[in-house]
Each structure stands twice: as C-alpha cells, then as structure tokens.
Length: 109
Image 1 (spheres, one colour):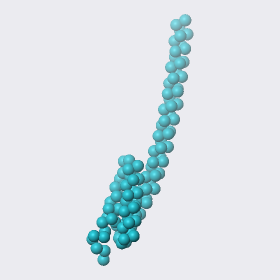
Image 2: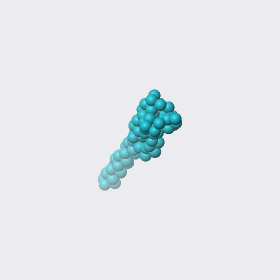
Image 3: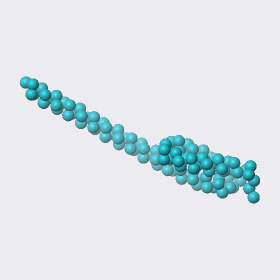
Image 4: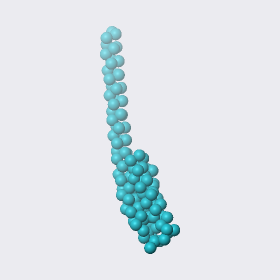
C-alpha cells in the first residue's frame, strides 16, 4: 500500500500534465512548459515510489510535450504563411497605386 505522503509529486505531476493539455489548445508554449514540469515531477515520483497517477502523468506529459511542439511548429508555419501573403498583398496594392497614378497623370494631360 502506498502511503499518502509519498504520492504528492505523482499527483502534482498528473495535474500539471492535464493542465498542459488544456494550455495546448489555448497557448502552446505555456502548455509545453507545464508538460515539462509535469514530466519532471512524475519522474521524481517514480524514482521514489511507483504510483498509478505518476505513471499516468508521465504518459500524459510525454503526449502533451509532443503535441505542444507540433502545435508550435504549426503556428510558426501559419505565421510565416500569413506574413508572406500580407507582403505579397502590400506589393500588389503598391503596384495598383502606381498604375492608378500613371492613369491619372495620362488623363490629366
């Protein structure tokens, strides 16, 4: 039987790993940090005493860390795509502006 005092790190690691999954949806970098904290706490607990929550927290933390890294990569890719699209859009707007200026100057003559 596992004593209640020795389960604290496993419970904390489990809770951090669950919170990490929630932050994956809201803000992946915070989810990544919480997932790493949960992983560390679960590893410490497992070295002291194996508990079911510590094992579950370890598995959830690993999954959460992987998903957070993938989410961060996806966000970077989306950001770069949006930035490139906006840059092309501004270039097209400037080209249209120049064309309209030329048309206006030709009409004025």
